[in-house]
Length: 170
Image (cartoon, rainbow, N blue to C red; front, side, top):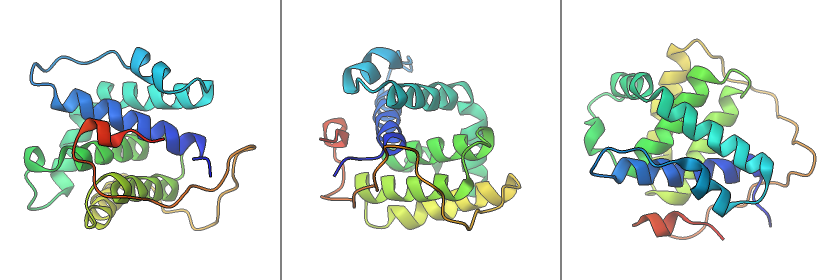
């Protein structure tokens, strides 16, 4: 079963942000070549590059917000995968009012379940729900219609990601 386009775009954004986060030299990698090599679908590419560029452009504010709400968690000691899932989710909640908060939370939780540990989904949910509430974004309750051509997201499979290569999806 195919992954929905925006879900796939979030996966690609996570892969790129993870790679940037792990670079010891602090340089930002150009997202375009990596993202274009991973997808030929323009919709996936554009949404992914928008997420990456938005997260990087607002990184200071996003990281500050995550640090503020993540009580008793040392931001720099969080798992890199979790930290970058939180960045994507916080970016969407703080700067993308066109994306319903419940969609952001659900997508982030699924990314955490798929690419991190068994407990990461609950952790990501707790942190992002506080970001959502503090940003004044109300959770949406109604089911959202799918875009034309999108299929249901597949269930998370497999173990946790140990390396960047493990983050790649079929």
